[in-house]
Image 1 (cartoon, rainbow, N blue to C red):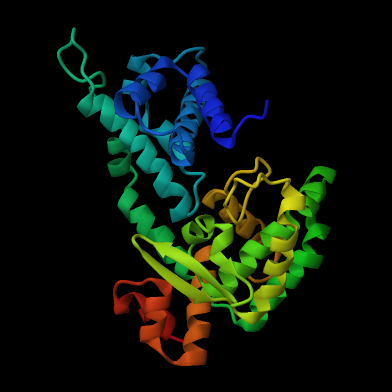
Image 2 (cartoon, rainbow, N blue to C red; image 1 turned 180 degrees about the vertical axis):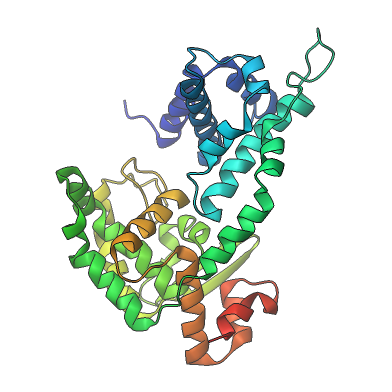
Length: 328
């Protein structure tokens, strides 16, 4: 009997709870019981389970007690979080950990002690001790330092990934993975470069949202929908991917996502970020998803000269958000 994608996700989610300390199950039952098991919930608890495994290994414990979580050194939290070197990577992790510790220090209740289960919120302390807000600002400033790319740069990067990137892969497994996913990965990058959409918008695209005949995509931003033209240089990569998507991934017809992973599920933002990072590390041009978007906006400004049209096209609420691309 064929198992649905939703059932597979629910099974994987249950595996997380079954193989984690009960404190994670209690958090789920108290805060999320009745919520549908979706990708966001799976990601949240997968991250928490990963954090708890890290703590268990660091403390060299078979089991983690409430007391040990209450008294966690903030240096351990820093060791876990410091591997995140971008705003996009760090902020979701901190948010997930903050919610977990908020529950146990504010909303939970120990009848015997007549207080919340945790007396101390180590994440809140870590934010102060390691100046979280200043670090986020520094990471944002650092992202802006990436140079803007021009149209030739976009084409050069796409050609490089299509033909030369494989030369920097030194294991058979990495080469095989590149061969299997090359057309999907290059299509994602080409679409980012050819439309300037955000990673979250790329992730949310469905098959019916792309119209190659009209050369446009339909992007959902909250309650609104925006049609965005796809630049010519990106079209060949997208046409090839869409044509062979089902063959490459043996996709179920029920999966509507445009970009899917080997598990036949919608790709994550972290996967797209990782792909971009791996290419940038070996290419002479350094870039991020943010710098690709800024470069596209600058390119569009040079072509049209219409800053108001770009504001609407790119989904900005305020015109001053575009100031940085007007400086050249």
